[in-house]
Length: 190
Image 1 (spheres, rainbow, N blue to C red):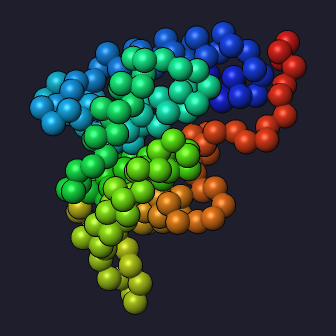
Image 2 (image 1 turned 90 degrees about the horizontal axis):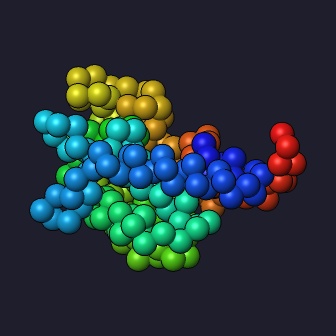
């Protein structure tokens, strides 16, 4: 929220608030033996978009586009490693491979992260592991792989959004999570 507001207003204090929030999120993270940073839930660690490290990494990268910070750059690099796993049990956007794809796709839009393209291609290719034929089309299982799901968070709609973010020529992203481009600056008193 603070990064989006900064993009609208240009008020640097908003980036200060974003940094405070990001540091709070990073305190909940641990670095795994592989060097990958995950969110520590106490009984497991998570790399995913909604409750894991790549969600934090998405915002870290957007923050770093506006202001340099060595701690955040190091955390971003460690989070990036969390998106290299060949195995994610679920396919969903919030807690599965589709969220990893959305994260990598956002990074590849930045010219500084072109080395992410091979990993993005691998993750797209591995989506086939999750696909289930359904009425002459493809569908994806939802939370805990118990049933097919068509929703955005856990199912086929989220997978479609992630694939669109990776392959479409025009920007495709979750609302509020994409950087504002060409936004008209609001007066600072609003």
